[in-house]
Length: 100
Image 1 (spheres, rainbow, N blue to C red):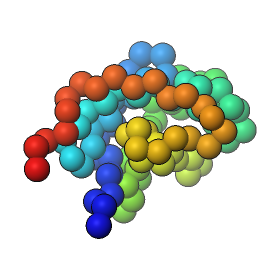
Image 2 (image 1 turned 120 degrees about the horizontal axis):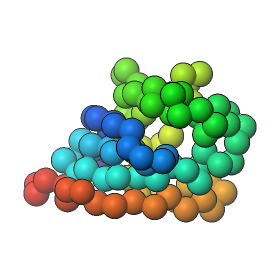
Image 3 (image 1 turned 60 degrees about the horizontal axis):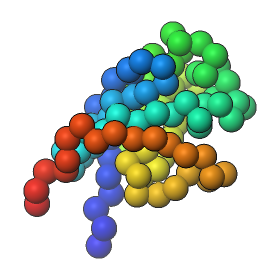
Image 4 (image 1 turned 60 degrees about the vertical axis):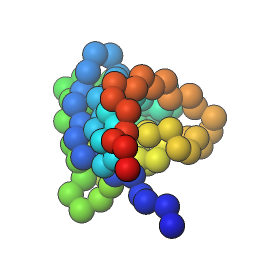
């Protein structure tokens, strides 16, 4: 059985980068700029830094969200799955997962 990864902390960084802390102890800086560049529901987040900075942990779920119930899959943010549409999500590992 595979353990589901959840996001336990989020902090907006420069440009459209987020620092995400995951339930396995990993910390990754993730650039969501290309995802937001797709527009649609992401357009207000892309176009307004103050909205981007409203990112938070969705209560009762495993991921982050912005106003309007806009969220991203935690497995995609972690790097376990690829996003739909072939968008690339650059990541930098700040801390490796804790040893089990």
